[in-house]
Image (cartoon, rainbow, N blue to C red; front, side):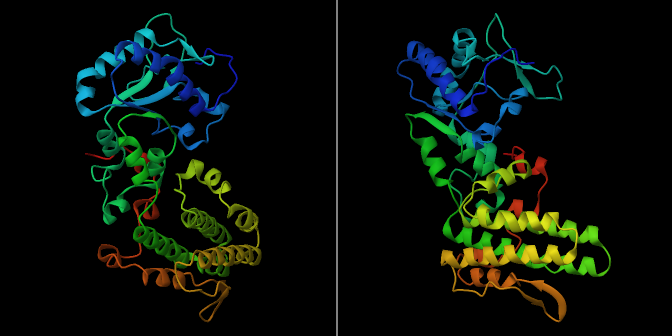
Length: 357
């Protein structure tokens, strides 16, 4: 239970205040020569900039990640934890720095609470390589083309989002820059796979409706809306978060103003004809966005019949094929068009889990 009536403060601002008003003074006094990085990165809605007052009810508050060399983690890690427990302010911007565990060993959620004793804080101490490997896998520090396919975009967003307040070592900034976006060849392959996903189901909206399965038609339409949103994020070089924040991330794209009305129309439609029309409007718009990238030759983005059947589609596989013709990386060219892990799996537990080292 939060024992604070303080006004909501975005979590990144709170993290900066925790560092500047609490952590930095303690380290400057006790370990004046220590070289480290201080950041708010990793899990938490505030890292992606989506936190609100609702977020304050659990696992939110003054939090910080400290990164040291592996040798300094071994030498000073426990000392820093103890120093901060004894000397951090009890509150920052009116929010407690003490976090009470839930009491349930199977429930890792923690809640802010005022305390008179030592602060059970949320400042972690680790080295950069170990932290990155724990979030994305051991190959993530210097990934090759194939390694990128094993890293969910949610996790990539957590590592490259947030804010860095100090980086004496430069390692955190280097890794974040390296992971900021996919290499060009990987990007092209993932775009092709996303177009292929649309191609696989764009005719099903009509086929379901034709046999009287209007609910099935609506479900397929919703899946296609999601795929178009993720395609738009890929085209704008933005990592797509998992389901809770996908719409919020999409709303920040330039494409949202163009695609939003059609996608909402497809979801709201109660008749197949309207559902198909709105989807095709969206397909044509995102097809024009693809052409504007110059990644391939210009492709006709207009709707067309699905072979001899009376369904209007884009035939999105045309875009997938054109993109694959530009992929020269051997380990990608030989793969099926299934893509990265979050293009074929969407379990939240899978996408946000800690990978096995």
